[in-house]
Amino acid sequence: MKRLFLINVCLILYFGGYAQDRIFQIWNVTYVSVKLAEKTDLGISEKIHYTPSGEGLDMKYGQLLVTQKLNQWLSISAGFRLSASKDQGEWINEQRPMALFTLKKKIRNFELVFTNRFEYRFFKTKDSQFRDVQRFDIFSPTLSKWGIGLFTSEEAFYVPIGNKLDILRLYAGVSIFDKRKIGLRIYYIYQISKNEKGWDKADVAGLNFNFRI
Picture 1 (cartoon, rainbow, N blue to C red):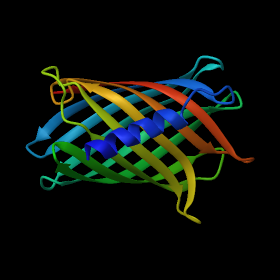
Picture 2 (cartoon, one colour):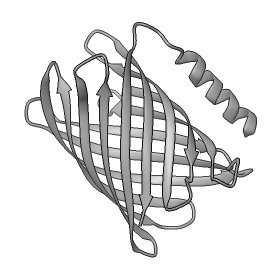
Picture 3 (cartoon, rainbow, N blue to C red):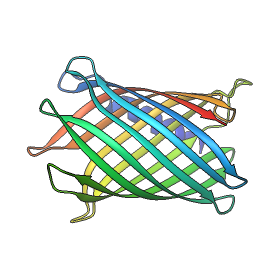
Picture 4 (cartoon, rainbow, N blue to C red):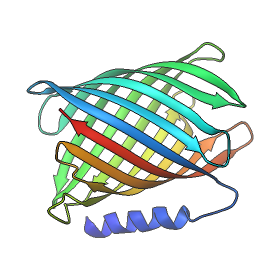
Protein backbone atom coordinates (compact mmCIF):
# COMPACT_ATOMS: atom_id res chain seq x y z
CA MET A 1 0.00 0.00 0.00
CA LYS A 2 2.82 2.40 0.86
CA ARG A 3 4.52 1.78 -2.50
CA LEU A 4 1.22 2.27 -4.40
CA PHE A 5 0.60 5.53 -2.54
CA LEU A 6 4.05 6.94 -3.34
CA ILE A 7 3.86 5.87 -7.00
CA ASN A 8 0.49 7.61 -7.34
CA VAL A 9 1.81 10.86 -5.83
CA CYS A 10 4.90 10.82 -8.07
CA LEU A 11 2.82 10.22 -11.21
CA ILE A 12 0.48 13.11 -10.37
CA LEU A 13 3.38 15.50 -9.82
CA TYR A 14 5.16 14.25 -12.96
CA PHE A 15 2.23 14.58 -15.36
CA GLY A 16 1.18 17.83 -13.69
CA GLY A 17 4.57 19.44 -14.22
CA TYR A 18 4.39 23.12 -15.10
CA ALA A 19 3.41 23.94 -18.68
CA GLN A 20 2.73 27.30 -20.31
CA ASP A 21 -0.40 26.06 -22.11
CA ARG A 22 -2.23 25.51 -18.80
CA ILE A 23 -3.97 28.05 -16.64
CA PHE A 24 -3.10 28.41 -12.96
CA GLN A 25 -5.81 28.69 -10.31
CA ILE A 26 -6.06 29.04 -6.54
CA TRP A 27 -8.89 27.24 -4.75
CA ASN A 28 -10.08 27.71 -1.19
CA VAL A 29 -12.66 25.67 0.73
CA THR A 30 -13.98 26.45 4.22
CA TYR A 31 -15.95 23.58 5.77
CA VAL A 32 -17.80 23.53 9.11
CA SER A 33 -19.21 20.26 10.47
CA VAL A 34 -21.88 20.34 13.20
CA LYS A 35 -22.84 17.15 15.06
CA LEU A 36 -26.65 16.86 15.09
CA ALA A 37 -26.85 13.39 16.64
CA GLU A 38 -24.55 10.47 17.43
CA LYS A 39 -24.38 9.38 13.79
CA THR A 40 -25.67 12.49 11.99
CA ASP A 41 -23.68 15.54 10.90
CA LEU A 42 -24.53 18.79 9.14
CA GLY A 43 -21.82 20.12 6.84
CA ILE A 44 -21.70 23.76 5.68
CA SER A 45 -19.10 24.70 3.09
CA GLU A 46 -18.02 27.58 0.89
CA LYS A 47 -15.62 27.38 -2.04
CA ILE A 48 -14.00 29.88 -4.40
CA HIS A 49 -11.85 29.54 -7.53
CA TYR A 50 -9.45 32.37 -8.36
CA THR A 51 -7.41 32.79 -11.55
CA PRO A 52 -4.55 35.31 -10.98
CA SER A 53 -3.83 35.78 -14.71
CA GLY A 54 -7.49 36.13 -15.68
CA GLU A 55 -10.41 38.09 -14.30
CA GLY A 56 -9.78 37.02 -10.71
CA LEU A 57 -12.69 35.27 -8.99
CA ASP A 58 -14.39 32.92 -11.46
CA MET A 59 -16.35 30.42 -9.33
CA LYS A 60 -18.04 30.42 -5.91
CA TYR A 61 -20.52 28.19 -4.15
CA GLY A 62 -22.27 27.57 -0.83
CA GLN A 63 -23.39 24.08 0.18
CA LEU A 64 -25.39 22.27 2.88
CA LEU A 65 -24.92 18.53 3.38
CA VAL A 66 -26.54 16.16 5.91
CA THR A 67 -24.63 12.90 6.48
CA GLN A 68 -25.89 9.76 8.21
CA LYS A 69 -23.30 7.18 9.28
CA LEU A 70 -24.83 3.71 8.82
CA ASN A 71 -21.86 1.71 10.12
CA GLN A 72 -18.05 1.84 10.30
CA TRP A 73 -17.59 1.65 6.54
CA LEU A 74 -20.70 3.20 4.95
CA SER A 75 -22.41 6.60 5.16
CA ILE A 76 -25.04 8.33 3.03
CA SER A 77 -25.61 12.05 2.46
CA ALA A 78 -28.07 14.46 0.89
CA GLY A 79 -27.44 18.11 0.16
CA PHE A 80 -27.95 21.22 -1.89
CA ARG A 81 -25.52 23.66 -3.53
CA LEU A 82 -25.91 27.20 -4.85
CA SER A 83 -23.17 28.00 -7.31
CA ALA A 84 -22.09 30.78 -9.67
CA SER A 85 -19.37 30.46 -12.30
CA LYS A 86 -18.04 32.95 -14.81
CA ASP A 87 -18.40 32.14 -18.52
CA GLN A 88 -16.99 34.64 -21.03
CA GLY A 89 -17.30 37.45 -18.50
CA GLU A 90 -20.87 36.62 -17.41
CA TRP A 91 -21.94 34.89 -14.19
CA ILE A 92 -23.96 31.68 -14.66
CA ASN A 93 -26.07 30.71 -11.64
CA GLU A 94 -26.73 27.09 -10.77
CA GLN A 95 -28.82 25.14 -8.25
CA ARG A 96 -27.69 21.62 -7.48
CA PRO A 97 -29.44 18.97 -5.35
CA MET A 98 -27.22 15.96 -4.68
CA ALA A 99 -27.08 12.53 -3.04
CA LEU A 100 -23.90 10.72 -1.99
CA PHE A 101 -22.70 7.46 -0.54
CA THR A 102 -19.24 6.98 0.97
CA LEU A 103 -17.29 3.77 1.60
CA LYS A 104 -14.29 3.68 3.96
CA LYS A 105 -11.72 0.95 4.60
CA LYS A 106 -8.37 0.82 6.44
CA ILE A 107 -5.52 -1.26 5.07
CA ARG A 108 -2.19 -1.24 6.96
CA ASN A 109 -3.08 2.12 8.60
CA PHE A 110 -3.84 3.69 5.20
CA GLU A 111 -7.40 4.95 4.93
CA LEU A 112 -9.18 4.36 1.61
CA VAL A 113 -12.31 6.38 0.86
CA PHE A 114 -14.58 6.03 -2.16
CA THR A 115 -17.39 8.57 -2.70
CA ASN A 116 -20.04 8.51 -5.41
CA ARG A 117 -22.11 11.68 -5.83
CA PHE A 118 -25.21 11.96 -8.00
CA GLU A 119 -26.31 15.51 -8.78
CA TYR A 120 -28.72 17.42 -10.98
CA ARG A 121 -27.55 20.83 -12.21
CA PHE A 122 -30.36 23.37 -12.73
CA PHE A 123 -29.52 26.33 -15.00
CA LYS A 124 -31.69 29.22 -16.23
CA THR A 125 -29.59 30.16 -19.24
CA LYS A 126 -28.59 26.71 -20.56
CA ASP A 127 -29.70 23.08 -20.48
CA SER A 128 -29.84 21.38 -17.07
CA GLN A 129 -28.14 18.01 -16.69
CA PHE A 130 -27.46 15.02 -14.45
CA ARG A 131 -23.88 14.27 -13.48
CA ASP A 132 -22.12 11.44 -11.67
CA VAL A 133 -19.00 12.29 -9.65
CA GLN A 134 -16.68 9.53 -8.41
CA ARG A 135 -13.80 10.20 -6.05
CA PHE A 136 -11.18 7.89 -4.57
CA ASP A 137 -8.87 9.06 -1.73
CA ILE A 138 -5.89 7.43 -0.04
CA PHE A 139 -4.75 8.92 3.29
CA SER A 140 -1.41 7.92 4.79
CA PRO A 141 -0.87 7.26 8.51
CA THR A 142 -0.01 10.41 10.47
CA LEU A 143 3.70 11.23 10.41
CA SER A 144 3.95 13.30 13.61
CA LYS A 145 2.11 14.26 16.80
CA TRP A 146 0.68 17.25 14.93
CA GLY A 147 -1.46 14.93 12.82
CA ILE A 148 0.50 15.62 9.64
CA GLY A 149 -0.22 13.14 6.86
CA LEU A 150 -0.13 12.79 3.08
CA PHE A 151 -3.02 12.10 0.75
CA THR A 152 -3.67 11.51 -2.91
CA SER A 153 -7.02 11.53 -4.75
CA GLU A 154 -8.63 11.00 -8.10
CA GLU A 155 -11.95 12.69 -8.95
CA ALA A 156 -13.88 12.03 -12.17
CA PHE A 157 -17.04 13.79 -13.38
CA TYR A 158 -19.26 11.89 -15.83
CA VAL A 159 -22.26 13.00 -17.87
CA PRO A 160 -24.56 9.91 -17.74
CA ILE A 161 -25.77 10.24 -21.37
CA GLY A 162 -23.06 8.31 -23.16
CA ASN A 163 -21.09 8.00 -19.90
CA LYS A 164 -18.81 10.80 -21.12
CA LEU A 165 -15.96 12.10 -18.99
CA ASP A 166 -16.46 15.81 -18.28
CA ILE A 167 -13.72 16.64 -15.75
CA LEU A 168 -10.78 14.71 -14.29
CA ARG A 169 -8.80 15.88 -11.25
CA LEU A 170 -5.67 14.32 -9.71
CA TYR A 171 -4.71 15.48 -6.22
CA ALA A 172 -1.56 15.23 -4.08
CA GLY A 173 -1.36 17.02 -0.75
CA VAL A 174 -0.63 17.31 2.96
CA SER A 175 -3.15 17.31 5.81
CA ILE A 176 -2.52 18.85 9.24
CA PHE A 177 -4.57 18.28 12.44
CA ASP A 178 -6.94 16.27 10.23
CA LYS A 179 -8.55 14.27 13.07
CA ARG A 180 -9.01 17.20 15.46
CA LYS A 181 -11.44 20.11 15.83
CA ILE A 182 -9.50 22.16 13.29
CA GLY A 183 -8.02 20.70 10.11
CA LEU A 184 -5.94 22.09 7.25
CA ARG A 185 -5.21 20.60 3.83
CA ILE A 186 -2.74 21.97 1.31
CA TYR A 187 -2.67 20.33 -2.10
CA TYR A 188 -1.87 20.44 -5.81
CA ILE A 189 -4.38 19.43 -8.51
CA TYR A 190 -3.83 18.61 -12.16
CA GLN A 191 -7.18 19.10 -13.90
CA ILE A 192 -8.48 18.49 -17.40
CA SER A 193 -12.00 19.61 -18.38
CA LYS A 194 -13.99 19.13 -21.57
CA ASN A 195 -14.79 22.06 -23.87
CA GLU A 196 -16.33 22.33 -27.34
CA LYS A 197 -12.99 21.91 -29.13
CA GLY A 198 -11.15 19.51 -26.85
CA TRP A 199 -9.72 19.70 -23.34
CA ASP A 200 -8.70 22.58 -21.07
CA LYS A 201 -5.84 21.87 -18.66
CA ALA A 202 -5.15 23.59 -15.35
CA ASP A 203 -2.72 23.57 -12.43
CA VAL A 204 -4.38 24.29 -9.09
CA ALA A 205 -3.00 25.22 -5.66
CA GLY A 206 -5.61 24.45 -3.03
CA LEU A 207 -6.15 25.25 0.65
CA ASN A 208 -8.95 23.76 2.76
CA PHE A 209 -9.96 24.78 6.30
CA ASN A 210 -12.09 22.27 8.25
CA PHE A 211 -13.81 23.02 11.55
CA ARG A 212 -15.74 20.53 13.71
CA ILE A 213 -18.29 21.65 16.29
